[in-house]
Length: 263
Image 1 (cartoon, rainbow, N blue to C red):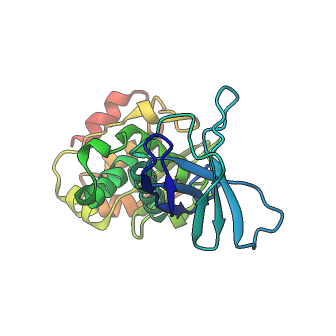
Image 2 (cartoon, rainbow, N blue to C red):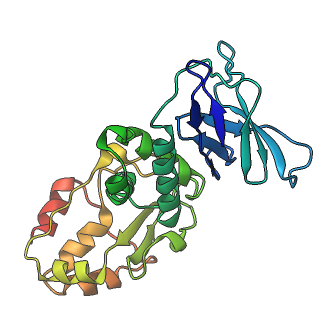
């Protein structure tokens, strides 16, 4: 639709676009080509083809009076056509990027948020000016918040049921429970083959991102038995031979476990 500019009385062509599921409550928003965003006003009959959109800047200190009337596919500015704040020319671009990031995040719940954002920015980059790109950190935050409700809840102890639907096929090797301790062994068939051919095993851990109850223990009793069998069997056989019902000898220090793995 078109509306007159009050400053120079020239006609300015305004285009509108509805974007679904864009608010925190998964409500639609309306954006125009000038960079303004609008939210849908509550209506008694949601199925009606008529509705009113109001400018999204509606805080306590600043409340923009501009509204847009929608009748089917026709949009008409309300009586107040002048916004009380400057437009964000990159608003539509930011919404488009965020929409694509949300869709990708739902498809792959456990993929790195940074990798998802990088893929989206690469796919949309040819159609967008580099200066209009939204901040990378904001898109990463969008991806993480989108997947927060889709992931299983963080366990509070080690007696949690393993959600195998979120584990790739043939990746979970064994779920070993020894007393009050639990060991989850994950590796692909290719990794198992490579490990079998390796002459030296090294134990490493990234404990900075580990939360309770997955804090590291001072000793790993299951590694003692793995080290004791290293000279007699291949690693695939060792891994498959560790039984959840077997009691493994306790180790007095981590040095013994490390030396056993290096054999």
